[in-house]
Length: 262
Image (cartoon, rainbow, N blue to C red; front, side, top):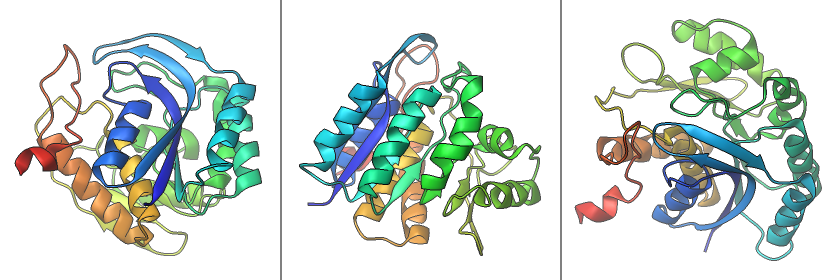
């Protein structure tokens, strides 16, 4: 059985973070493992508090996974502090996994910050060069690249800038744009557009976590990068189309929608 590891924060309400990652990987037939870097007290409406796990325990968790069940792919999500980032980067440099999908989580769906402002430089210098593929949404891509994005050309320029920072490939997600939710993949040479129709729902909690975990799962299963992104986008679109009316804010998607359709 293929395996995947998620390194991210824990969402106690179950829609995002580690919980969304494990659900996604399991739904796609990959054995899921996790390293928790932060415990986030959040729900669909707000983030109440964040408690970061110590760098030594983060490192120990990564050791525990790699020394016993080596993952075929790694997904990295929320890393709130430079200390978390250095711990993760050091261990990934040691173990050198084949595929690393990095979702540079900066804000929760409700806008609450999940990454310290002072961490951006460390993200760029330490984490981005580890990426097989980086998956920023438009606000994250703007923050990392330092440019404003209003159209496809802006997405392309941001992808070029971020690619030059060391990422193997960059997937700029278009969900924050007006109009269709088209995503753009740049592999350092070629651009690929993944068309997406906009779904009329507020229940999109954890979609970025879900997409990046799906990409990691498909890479673990042996798909090419373009195929993995395409299949992951199809999966997350289905999860959004079947989003669950739970909570008072941005509700969660349904990671197991395919099984409910049977």
